[in-house]
Amino acid sequence: MIKITVDQKVYEALQKAFPKPANTAHRALAKYISLLEAMLFKSLHFAATPLQRKFDLFAIFFQQLANQGVQIGPAKLRVHAWLRNNNLNLVESVITGSNLTGIVSQYKWTSTFVAMILATIKL
Image (cartoon, rainbow, N blue to C red; front, top):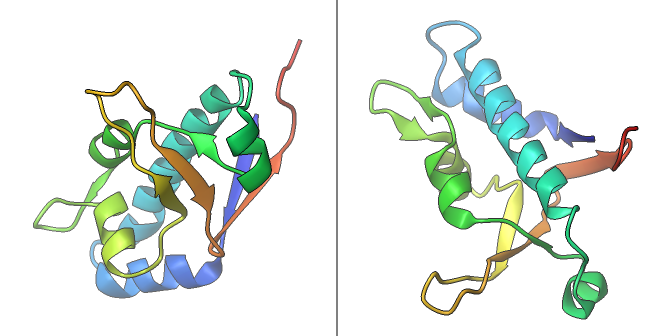
């Protein structure tokens, strides 16, 4: 199980951008974090490549992260897109994958993201 802790400035910026209805920003970010935790946990089940070990990268599918994330606001903006547009990314793309080449996107953590691996396998 992976537990992600996000810098407080991300919550504050999202709350400032989407103040109504109350607590919407907190719920949306919590759902986005839950999705990211699940994707990271799934990524840890596969053996890391030498490149991933050297640069602390992890493989996740960008399309799933971008499109399965939560929508917020009257314009139904994706949380992932809003975070990227406001320079508050939790993860940063290092190597962009492609379905044509079969390469999965490689990401690294940003300063607004702190991951704590509680237990990778729970028996």
